[in-house]
Length: 362
Image 1 (cartoon, rainbow, N blue to C red):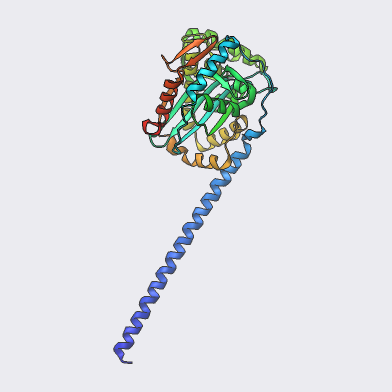
Image 2 (image 1 turned 45 degrees about the vertical axis):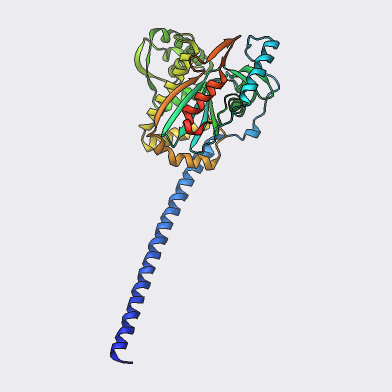
C-alpha cells in the first residue's frame, strides 16, 4: 500500500472515530435529558400523589341514592307535572350533547346542610367550562329553583338532585336536562367555604347597607352552628371591604335583596372569582399550606390522571378570559308553580354555543 493510500485509510479511520465520538456525546446528552425529564415527571407525580391523597375522592358508584328526602314543593299538581315532563322530554329527545375534547367541564357544588347526616340541597351550582380553543373560562350558574326531571326521582327543583344523590346525581341531572356533558364535580358545604375564604386571607367585596343587614343574620346562624361568637364577625357598615369567611359566605347566601335568587348567583360567582384572584397572588409556601388544608374539605370524583393533567395546565388556564352567565337566561323562561322553567330549545342552544362555539354545536 502506498503512502497516499495509507494516509487515506488513516484519514477515514479518523473521521469514523470522530463520528463515533460525536454520536457517543449525543447519546450521553440524550440520556442526561431523559434522566432529568424522568426526575421531573417523578417529582411532579410525587407532588400530585401527595396532594391527591389528602383530597376527599369518592367514586360515583360509592355514593348512594336516597329512597326519599324532604324536598321543596314544585307548586304543581300531578297532572301539570306529567304534562310538563312529557312536553320537555319531546324537546330534549331531539338535542344532542356537544363532543369537543378541547373543552373541560367541572361542576362546582355548594351544599346547604346543617349536619353530615345527609347530602344536603345544592344551594350553588356553578359549571366551570375551560375552552382551550377560545381560551375562555365560562362560569355558568344553574339556579336552585330550575325545573329538573331527576333520574329515578321525577320532577323537582334542581337543588333536590343533590339531596337525593350528591354530586354524581346533580351532574347526571344537568346533563340529562340541559344537554351539557360534565367531566367532573367538586363539592363543599358552608363550613368548608368559610374556611377556604379565611385560608386565602378573605375577599374584598363592595357590599350595600341592605345586604349587610341580611348578611349579619346569616353570620349569626352560621356562628351558632360552629359555637363561634357572632359579634366577632358582624359587618358594621356597607362599602368596599375585606370580608372574612363567615361574612363572605353570608354575602353569597343573600337571596332577598336586589333581584332575588338571580342576583344571589352573581354574588356566588363574585366570591368564587375573588377567591381565585387571591390564590393567584399567594407564594409557593402559602399555596402549599392552602392545598394541604383545603383539599380534605372538597369532595370530588376527579381521578388521579385527570388531576395531574389539570395541574400541569393551570398556568395556561390562569391567562384565559373569564366569562360569566346563568341559567335561566333573561327572556328565555317562565315561572310555573314554584319552579323556573326554561325555554329548553333556545336555552340549550345558547348554553352550548356560549361554551363550545358555533362550529361545535349542531
